[in-house]
Image (cartoon, rainbow, N blue to C red; front, side, top):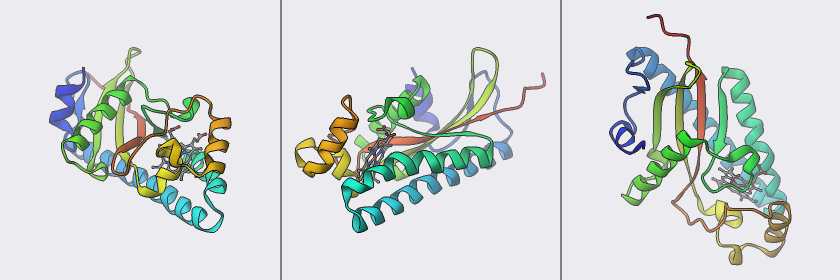
Length: 200
Ligand code: HEC
């Protein structure tokens, strides 16, 4: 459904859902602000994870990916007046992380891009979407790559440390967020900003 649009605008333009295009400046500014917020989330989370894994060990670090990510996303949401979330097409926590249809389409395209040789860190996507009630949103996604440090908890089950595996299996019996390898797209930061009504 999204295939053609996605391919043509990946990393570039904002395409409006209903034939309008955001003013050039607004588009660029929104994209940059969304990119900065996403990078802040990815970098803060990665840094805290690395540190906690080293000092307290992987079993203790489970709370970092669980609690720190939504905390940072929450801060970014409040500070900017957007909805900032972390989503995936293979979730551990279906409550917080499950992608909606638009997000699932973008993630699918991100996977294709990585198969074609792109790095997750290069992948972002923007679009103006009009929902059924007529409200327009600026939507942005930035891919979250799988780093070696992520594999302790998102790699092959058999290779997870026993205490980590046990803790994760008992807390998340429906876990789908395993079996990744480094360099794959683990998910994305997804940002949704309500746009003012169009004057037409
Ligand atoms: C110490 C274990 C651990 C490590 C290491 C870890 N995670 Fe997680 N991750 C989790 C847990 C537990 C959850 C579920 C959090 C929740 O309950 O919301 C999760 C959830 C996620 C989610 C949200 C989507 C989902 O699956 O529910 C993303 C995205 C994610 N992790 C990415 C990463 C990335 C990227 C790295 C490496 C930089 C990483 N994780 C490292 C334990 C870990």
